[in-house]
Picture (cartoon, rainbow, N blue to C red):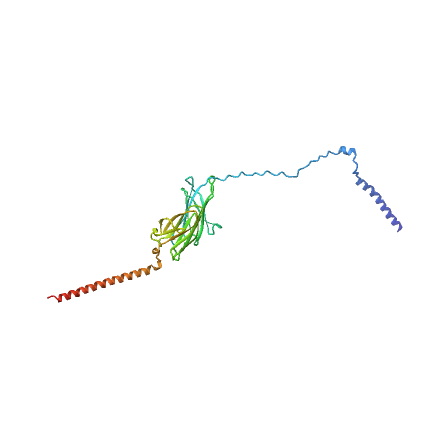
Length: 313
């Protein structure tokens, strides 16, 4: 047993003695502190290249802004009531420059019911060869509106828009009253008791007021009376189907206008049958009285003639 242990120990020592020289040959020691001249002569030269990691930005190309045209076109814009018993209006106008029509131009037409805070586009009209455009508009209810016609312009002419003020009201018999102007219009109302249409204007320059009155209320427009700030004002009138167009100028600033319809011109359609019946009854009574009077006179004359005949000698 002792001999076996000795043999194992001897074999272990033999293995260790063989492995130590092999490990020394496989991993030679490297002296980092010293370098032989032969090694330096055989090593290639080291070239240090510094790389700029900052990327050069590409130049920004700023387009040259296109100058806005300064030539200003001219736009005429109007709103006309076309029905005395409904809210129907014709929007029309003309676009021109230097007295020459601008054809095939897109005109955007919009309305505002809150003094310009919010706008609603309701039509897109195109100008004709003569520069005119038109469309129809039916507001949903009575009230005061701003109407605007806008053109975007082109390469030589700048954009253009024009604004109008429109007020609409009606009475219990569905008679429609309307007034338009470049001046701001407010508080349009009709009083059926006094037969008076009144409203206020506020403008920065002299303007034309166009007011539409149903013919069912006025047979002759010359009998109307218009007052501006309680002073009688001149006006012109024009017949348009079942409406009267009443036109008068007003100066800049704030003004109150009243349009008085003569009381004798007011005939309520609901009273017309009774009025006709009353007139017929009066005429019938007059005729009956005349007939009775004539018969009585004839009878009296006949009686007198008979008495005279009897008394003859």
